[in-house]
Image (cartoon, rainbow, N blue to C red):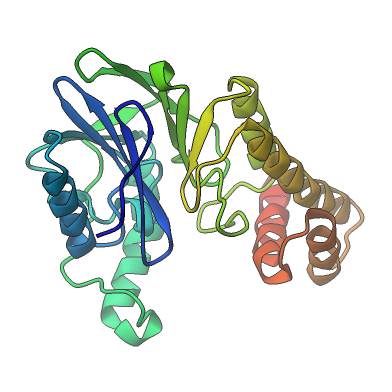
Length: 275
């Protein structure tokens, strides 16, 4: 069982392997809000058991920060006992990306031997957020804010105003570079992050999707690195430069690994061509 670190009053974070996923609990007098459910029902059941062992209340609400497998594939464990909340585009993202990926992985487990997909049932949120949803946990309000397309087009952040804390999923990553995964928007992501940082206080806490708790300065710094990638994509596309050349330039400017940046260039080129 990982340790639950109380980073603010009634706000707990645990970092789970695999993938160093940050799972967050927000406590109100009426129950607990859980943020993200990990990769499969067994991992989600582990979270449920660990939370029960804390003896601080029952999980009554769940928020998916986005649709990716490592943050929402455990939803089914909580669907009968808690209200699941997430971005309104999660069902569409499931249909386009996660369902085909799950089908392929299930058909050929050797394609992703590090994970266990047995029994995963894609379970979209009960409450779909298009703009902002305020939730009363009992003596504590939280804001669930839908973001513009960035890391995905299903990103939400959970703002806990009385704790000065933002739970942001993978729009920010600390234990590794930002991941341009399925459904990313590399040209829009920097602006999303910069706008989000402008709403944060200098001393606010930021819980990333993976890694340690950070602050507003870290968010600004990551926005600058993402902007370096976006700028390289825009310039490269305008000059019809090869993807490989642009990826190398973007990797150098952003101080990110080439293998992480090249998918962003391909995705960005595709989106610019479509527009």
